[in-house]
Image (cartoon, rainbow, N blue to C red; front, side, top):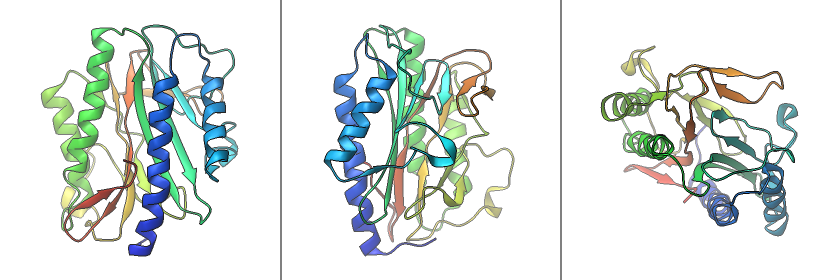
Length: 251
């Protein structure tokens, strides 16, 4: 799917609100707050700004955002029984739809109180991996260059690992559309992956584990945890390819 400049205006609008919501949430996090409380804050923010929460009801997902704490890699379901405590890290993934049907999708990992050195390292590695991938988004490069940069950075500059089963995705007027954006490169030939062209819009959202890369899905069908119960962190942006490079909408 290719988007034009009018589409980009809409994507900037919903992307900026998504970013603003995530920054607002970061100011509310403290020991004792539940992940259901966070979900309620996202819902109220959406209502205030005439937005819809894309995850609510999507393929049966029961909440307004994803709240993934510590060894939960992604798709954590908010719960009144899950209270944050000092030392936790939490990845909050928010996707909004504006009144014209455009999507903004972003994720940040936050610290609650004073966290361990391992938590700091995996959080920093996830943030660095996202930006290494974004640096490769220029017309003429291949989608495979994004995952190659992420994997190379994680393996050469950190002690962490990249989850390969979960990928970024095309987005715009649909939540998920082509192309997929892998965050690793070993499984394919970079030159045979699609070429990046102006007008493409997608997410880059590497999930980085402090231990091994393996993950598993729990019985609820959504919550994805690290197999070795090590910490995990994620950052995500919605990005459009431009004539000279790229534009990050969720910032």
